[in-house]
Length: 265
Length: 296
Image 1 (cartoon, rainbow over the protein chains, first blue to last red):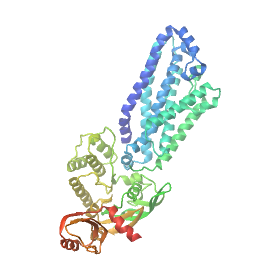
Image 2: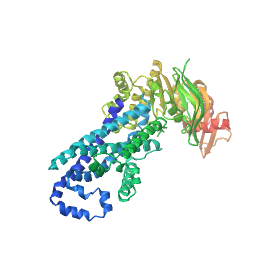
Image 3: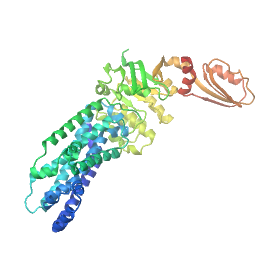
Image 4: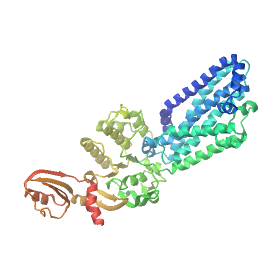
């Protein structure tokens, strides 16, 4: 419990930063919608002239722009990108920063097992992600409900937004296992940005190519908003893969962290 | 007397490079045990294995009769550790860090924290980031002692402390020792080990080369002597037992001496000196000229 409290304190400022960024981003993108709606037809025509590949990568689905929720899925593409970076930063950093800042010697020689320490860190991350998502969901809901003239599907909105935190958990797990498997992480941001943009690039290939198999290799594609909008559900296959990745990464992290050599300065 | 620490054939390889090999020694309850050797000899590797920070390749070590890896959290309750270099969380105040440290132990450490801070002249309300190296080190000392541990493990404890603070720190260690705490300290400075410890283990290139009572070592008092003379000194003037690393450079002569000091002073009084330096050679020098020769 003391480790959890300490970790929350340490991660608080960064959490506020990411929460403000994500909320600001979705607020800004959603604020365009009223302007866009007035000139929807000309705008859609212009968008439609974009090459299909660009449209796909940017998350532009012309048909769905007519409804606020549809337009929101476009804004969501970018929210997800930022959220993924937040989660990946946490994954790469939460354990490795203690070694980099040489505080590992301190905490690991206290009467707390490594399992306990890692568990406290995982709970911290979960808390941080949940708090971020509560604010994000509140802000995005305020905009969507404010912009919608007729009712919107709450179910679909919830499914879309829940996919944000679910994707974050997947990104986090991948980051965590990489950080405890790596000999040394010199800096968090380059590694995590590299990974996230790598996954984003795969995602771009996946949507532009006809090859559906590519989707398995990027968490960006596990919860497709188009699918949610049409079917009001997630795709089971990807839900299973996502769960499996999280379970494998987290268990592997425990095993690796338990056996990890903490080198001196 | 019971052994607090028992180390048996402890070996650690980092990949293919050797860290330590077949390290074996015991530390008895209530003693101050010194662990000395040149930098990179394996002191930290041994200590970090005892603390379960690194995993041994083979061999085993127990503390309080418990396996130091399997029972690490249990052992840690009664161990205080001061690393050679201290770094703590950004933006934290000394007070917050110490309270965080205390929160791991199931006892009230407030009183002890204040006592120690007063003794070491440490301001609890300052931010750790703003502290000088020596003051950070003090935070490390308080952090390691605030729960009145039964075993204190120190890795190169005095680097960065001024001589006055070093004395206060040594007194503190001796007091803890009188209270009943066993102390294991590593160092590459023979002098400080000689002052504090009752027994030492000497490690070199990852293996223990000597395990000695400090009284024996004290007889081996090493001095680095450097003199400047007025006239010429006969070549064989210092050709006596215990002189090594003999070098002349114009009128300057330097060597390491191990043996009776009076013998040396009488020898020196036979010369007309313009200058004289007597220093404690560091361990590397001693190793270079004594232990390595003996081995060979």
